[in-house]
Image 1: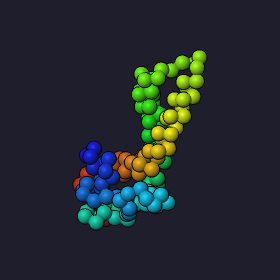
Image 2: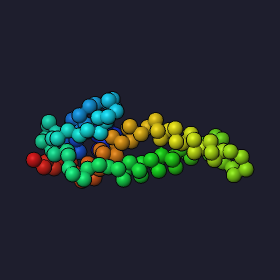
Image 3: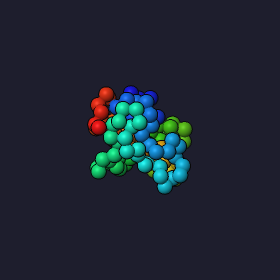
Image 4: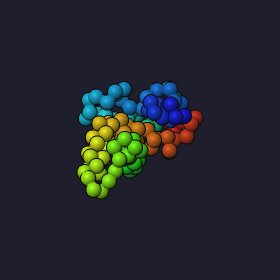
Length: 121
């Protein structure tokens, strides 16, 4: 299940991608979902399928994970500017990974609400 989720495959059959475009470009059409899966016919779109809350949670988790590599290498102290450097570096990492995080949050949302082998035709 995890490899299919990370590559954004259909939550029902896990054979085809759920997005219209395979890559992240064009950025304006980054999170456009297919209407139905070509293999199993699973409906991909719903009115409430935005994944925005999951995207926020992934961003917060990424900030915490960045602390895991920043603290041992550079250290954290309130006496110098290391907290500001941490926030700047974490913000840059989140901005660079944001297109993938947006797609991943949509895929996680679908995986939460569509079971494996379930076809909603």
